[in-house]
Amino acid sequence: MSSNSALQLVNERGWRSGFANLLRNENLEWWGSRRWLTQAGLWLLILNGLVALVMFVTPAVMQVTPDDNAGAMDPISMGIPAFFQIGATALAIGTVILVQGEMVGERQSGITEWILSKPVARPAYFLAKMVAHSIGIFAIMIGFQSTVAYGLFWLANGDPLPLLPFLVGVGGLTLHTFFYLTLTLMLGVFAKTRKQVLGVAMGSLLGGMLLLNIISQLGLITPWSLPNILPALVIQIPLPFATAFMPILMTAI
Amino acid sequence: MVYWEHKAGQKTFDSPKGGKHNMNQSNEIVIQTKGLSKSFGEVKALKSLDLAVPKHSIFGFLGPSGTGKTTAIKLLLGLTRPTNGGGTVFGLDIGRNSVEIRKRVGYLAQHPRYYEHMTARETLRFTARFFYTGPKAEIGDRVAETLELVGLAGKADRPIKGFSGGERQRLGIAQAQINYPDLLILDEPAASLDPQGRRDVLEVMERLRKYATIFYSTHILDDVQQVSDTVAILNHGELVAQAPLEELLVGSEGTVYSVVIKGDPSQAHGRVAGQPWVSGIRATTAEGQTAWQVSVTDEAVAEATLLRLVLSDESVTVTEFGRKKYELEDVFLSIVKEDNNE
Image 1 (cartoon, helix red, strand yellow):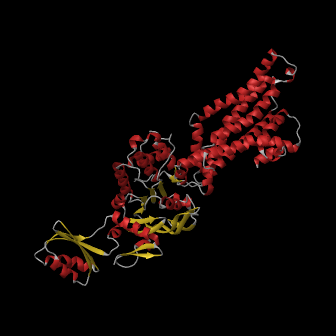
Image 2 (cartoon, one colour):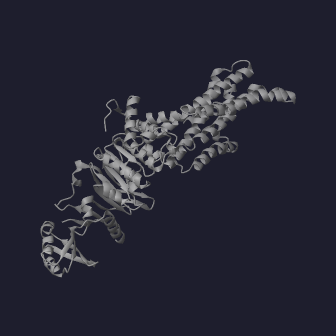
């Protein structure tokens, strides 16, 4: 066997061992295949399709069949909750479904064992997936969709929305989505089957929303109330500090 | 005197020239474990394994299915943590330095799995980048060379999902040795292969032996006899034997000569049995010939004298003569059976 003098040994140590190569590979899964295009199209339909529906189609339908309350519903006050409230829940569900098999699937198939038999630290294996999915989800499912949504709001409103509150809303959306991304990946480390991952993550998301109706204080210490407060932050409805920022802070933690 | 002795439930090997086999010379040892144990709940998968793998050996790690071979391998690679005991690979602790160890190791799992959508070339490129950085072309050259070595050059750009079992196994060996490892650990490398595939794998192992120590688990004893120079036998999670293959095949009954005689052997029998270095003769008769298994205590004298003694009786003809060698299967079954009876 010949030796290749131009090749140098990888010099990653500690938790970073193997990280760069794994991240490159995980990024390739997002950007080297049709995944990004599929996800972009899918979420354009789900999120901005919904926003367009409530802002442009619903008012037109209401004008055809007028009732007493129709005048009170302006497109923006329907579109923003659709994007930030329904969208936050939809993105969380989508993220859970997208990554539910990432850790468990590779562990069950033997790929994890193969990868960890190389000079790879376990945290690097987890973090590479986390970072690559964060980039992909943020760029395609949140960033791109938010840009389109901002354009739709502008179109419906006639004027652009104030940028800062909108960005705060997008930040909250990102935080909420990343919470479920992290939760699902971490569950994948411990769970034995995809069903367990899916069950616990979805249970947390949907069960949490139900629990919130019973014990409203849970909203201060969990991410469950985030979808409800985001529209208010974007529309700039004044909220008590604790109600507005405690869920954000606790979710981030 | 060659013999197997029991020490705390484990048989160790003493060489005929006295002293232990060179496994005790730590600078020549690549893998060393001491009391390495692993339990899964109540189940003891591996019980106090003391292993010493000499440098540049092809070390066969034998045992019936489910005896803890794979568990031991995973412990060596740091893929799972020991319940008790520990070990070193290249002198590095398997618990604390597993990433450093894996930089110098190539591993082939029992049922290797890769990203199915990747091609063989992409898989090897991905694997190589865990070890090397450098120009794309250089990594490409290394990959191409490795594909050539395992005979997959013609299928390098086909997705793995279309690969046969043999092709997957070759790819497994390729990815295991892409970093030119000092130690190759192969878990049942030929188990799922047809005879041709098995022969190919053994050939690759032979080719690689000059570059690396090869530690492989198997239950295919023919393969071990073909390529291994040192062997350890595991049974019920316990090491029951460890020795160089040549010496293991001599057997545990001391030196035995096999003599097949035509004619009446009674006179020769008396003459041979009377020798002080003969400890026993076991005779069987079949098809007009008598076969002796002559156990001796002095190998050198026996080699020089035994045949002459028999032939001094002119009424007999010797049709076969030689030192008895056991098939590995006989030795393996005898050791495992003996261990099961204890």
